[in-house]
Length: 416
Image (tube, rainbow, N blue to C red):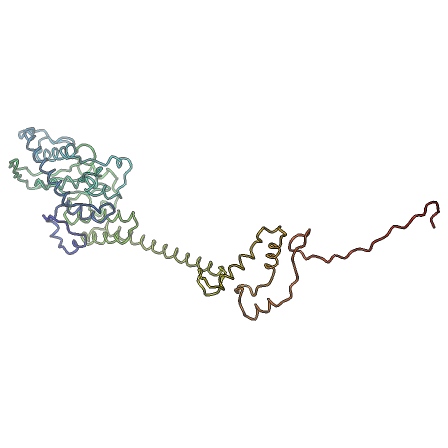
């Protein structure tokens, strides 16, 4: 077993047979390395802690071995080991890991599952001192990692939306331990072990067809569920979990890269082909949306540039004197300083300036073309409002009316 975990890129250069020599914990932590929140991941320290847990489990199994009755004919059940020595080993291994080592389900994920957090999908969320626990995606990996350190024939098994482990030994296993010393032979056996959550159970395969999700016709067709996973299939599953974490963070490069490596490890798995095609289509749609947003932003900038006062062909933030003068003229034409109803000198001058022809429509205020020069030279009618008249009206000339003088009256004389 290798002591140092290679990088994800280095795994592409390994042969498929070479993956069998790697510890399942190394494969899991290698797939987790590089995810957000794993910058300070110390793989060597986590592997050493798993070794300590395995030594503690070994000691407790030897201490409680007297409880197992070799001559017992009690058949095992879903919640008891009965006369199965292999189930007895798994029972106490999970009991020690859960009660003494702190392997537990994340308390915040029991009713609100969020399997897109790296610490919930990979074992560093359990083994690390600051970890809050794991889920069904990481707890069975810890059990298998500790069990293989003890020489037990345990393997990870996939079901629809769930992961557990299995004791799969058709020939029997010989246990040879030292410190404490123990050597015995375990008869052939095959059973499933459910340790995700609280407690221990031995469910048959039919249980996982209906729980936690009911299988569909496609699940029966691809035939990848309820199989003891090899090292290549295990690493491919870890890479798919890695891709889902990057997918939630919209890191399409790492997401598609992980799915590509998973397909290389399991080329016959149709699930990974379908998932890779789905994520590729989503990435293409994402790229199209970004391209469209950039085009819309460019169009908006172009429209603003056309409406922006200044010299044609100059940038928006041009500081030449022509552009600055154009901006000042346009700003003065909009609204008089004191409003439309004010009759002070400045407001009247602003309204008069706004009524003057400045050139052809769409041309700059300082355009020297023939059309603009002709419009500027046209005679203009004054439209300055006089006092007492509304703004914008032409003041009519005031012509005084002729005065009519009253006729003088003579007192005492009749009128003629």
